[in-house]
Amino acid sequence: MNYFITAIHTDSGKTLASAIFCEALIADYWKPVQAGSPTDSETIRSLVTNSLTVIRPERYSLKTPASPHAAAKVENLSISIHDFALPKTARDLVIEGAGGCLVPLNESNFVIDLAGHFNCEVILVSNIYLGSINHTLLSFEALEKRKLPIAGVIFNGPENPDTENIILHQTGLQCLLRIRPEIDITRQTVTKYASELNGNWHRRR
Image (cartoon, helix red, strand yellow):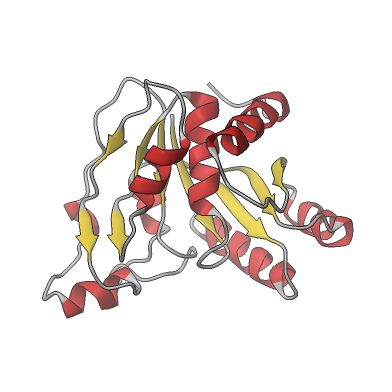
């Protein structure tokens, strides 16, 4: 199974969520487009403890920390959705998007269009802040418009039952995991949440 990790905006916790999924599923990891450094692949490599997860190389590794379409323009590149091919693996594959759902790849396609291109189940990361209800529901509508299957939502940040409950009620999504504020993000942190995820989630095979 291919899982696409997306979020309601940049710095929502996609890379931590991706590490947790790789650890829980013993899955491979792929970041199709990286813009800026340090790379998310390097972070995943530092956080996953199992010896089977393979970090697949990015299709585009751009130096400029910007949206893919803007970073590519700086480097005189043009990104096409047809440039991407899934890495071959016998394991589950965790694919991490760049930024939020509607970050542009080019003038026609958004990052979330890769999920449909690869026939992925989507995991939506919603971090908790003032305005996150609106951003989460708008992201959900963008996923629904594209008829993408959504495995569930991950909440990241201080627990807020009012925010979480209205999102779950309005979307009908399953809460797969709650990532609480952590002083340090370590391999032990990832292992802890991977165990919680496996206990919470009865996934499709």
